[in-house]
Length: 325
Image 1 (spheres, rainbow, N blue to C red):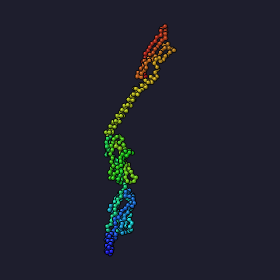
Image 2 (image 1 turned 90 degrees about the horizontal axis):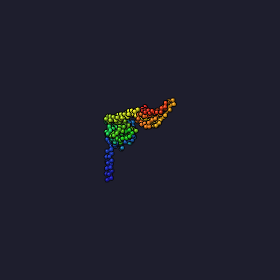
Image 3 (image 1 turned 180 degrees about the horizontal axis):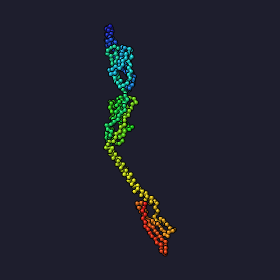
Image 4 (image 1 turned 45 degrees about the horizontal axis):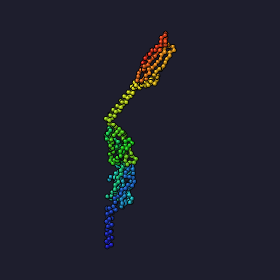
């Protein structure tokens, strides 16, 4: 009984050993593991990355081959159980994509393939372009703005501004297409300067677009120009009226006030005794106030002659009208 048990165990081990050998009598390799040991899967131009490929268990020597999309990139023979290391330099967009490695014995057919690793190239974005289907708008109109960066690795995040103020939440585009926002032109202040900015995973890479301004539509601009011309004409007429009022109203009014402030009081104003004249003249003004709108005043002159040749003194009254200068 013990002998039978030992015999069965021996045949079982022989069967397992046979399954693990190749036609050359060597132990079959297992599926190798491809591991990134230096760098990142998101790479930038000129970046170095290192991959490790190892098959366990396996009987050395083992040949490891690195493939990119079924094209051989590099190969390494290992005579021990240490992994094969492959160092790559990402020098162009063609260097990114899916990588696999293959483990096999030297001079044997077949072999096993590893898992795949895919690299993504991080490219700096180009300056985005801000545009709109229309450059003219009027109040009460809906318009659109689109921001697009032609180059740069995805995803790309866009943000819109008016002046320095953010006017939209950021938009992250997973495809190479423009980010679009909708605007409502409500007042003249909405005709300001617009910009957008774009960035992606590439380090320290933010780009601002060109400036974009909406212009007032022709009919709106014509209405505004008519209003401005009307206001200008009204202002011109006011200036002309003021210019005409100066000589015909303001200057006479000024002279009237000046004359009133310098005119003598009513009643007896002066008496002139002519020493060499035989006549005595007395000027007397009528006691009436002079109104500013009047252009003349009345006054009286009393001339009294001395008694001559036995004649009695007599008085002569002269009424005069003074026309104002």
